[in-house]
Length: 324
Image (cartoon, rainbow, N blue to C red; front, side, top):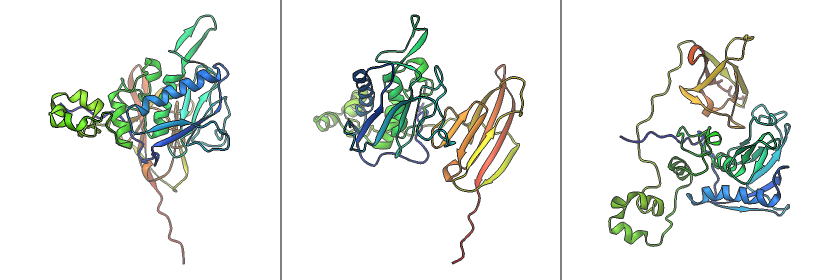
C-alpha cells in the first residue's frame, strides 16, 4: 500500500529563493554560554543541510544582514505585544520557541527556559527541565525554511517531537524539505551505479546517496487520508482581505476549561504558525486571505468524546471596484 503523506508545506508556498542561507544569533540565552549556543544552533542547521541543497552560514558582523534572525527572549519581545498573530512567551515550562515562515524567517526561543547542549532531562538539583537546544532549534528551523507540522509521529517536524525526544530528520522530513528545495546527489559515481541497476536493486542506498539520479527526491503519489467532516451548522463570515479574524470555542463562561480541538476543512490544526494562524486553548486567530478561506471547526471534548462543535466558513468579501 502507498504511504500516506504526512509532511505539510505551508499553503502560501513561502520558501527562500536562494540556497546559501545566512543566520545570526542576535541575543543569547542566560543559561547556556555563547560557544555552546553557537555549536547547538550549527548542529541543528546541519541536520537540514545534510538532506537538502541548502547551506547555512552564521553571520557575526553586525553590519551584515542575515536571512534568519535568532534570539532568546522573555515575555514581551519584538512585535508580539501588538501583533495578534505573534504570541508572546508564557514563562517557564510553557511554549519553548516559535518561528516565522520565509521571508521573515525569525526564530524566537523563550529565555525563561533552561537550555543545554545535550538531551532534555529533568534536573532534580535545580527542580527544572533542561531543554535540548539542538532538538528544539532543528524543529524551528524547519518552520523557518517553510515546513509546517508533520502528522508522522516519528518526524522531527511532528508537533510532539520535543516530548518524544526526536532529534533526527526522518524520511518524512526529507520528503518535505526536498519538495520545497529539490535534492542533490552526494556521490560522483551515481551515474555508473544507476546504469548497473542500483536504483531498483539498492533503492534505500541510492535514495540516500543518489536521489536525484534515481528520481527519488520526492515522495511518490499516495493515497490521501480522509479528513474529518465538519458539522452541518456552519456560520458564514464575509471578511475583508487582511483583517484578523478570531474565534472562540464553546460557551462564553464554562465552569471548567474544556478540552478543544480545531480543524480547517476537516484537517486538524495541530499548532500555531506565527504570522499566519494562532491557536491558544479555546481561541483561534487567522488573517483573512485567499489561502485562509475555508471552514474552521472547533470540537469540545469531555472524557474523550466530542460533545459539541461549531463551524465558521470564512470567505473574502468582494472588493469594490474603484471609480476611475
